[in-house]
Amino acid sequence: MIDRSKLPNTFAFVVTASARARQLLAGSLPRVDVAEHKKTTVATKEVLTGAVEALPYAKPAELAGE
Image (tube, rainbow, N blue to C red; front, side):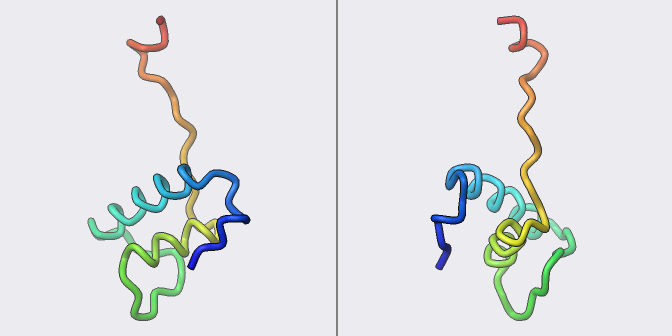
């Protein structure tokens, strides 16, 4: 179970963990102890421990002029 009180933004956590889970499923190496956990659990653990973090969002060039 995830202690949501320690998360500044639940949405950002979910987006980051899901992107990392996709990377792990595609063959990326885990950055934390894996044991016998599923890729989604490993991704969650990586985000919670700070082993991975979200990249800042940048608007595409065609939208920046609006």
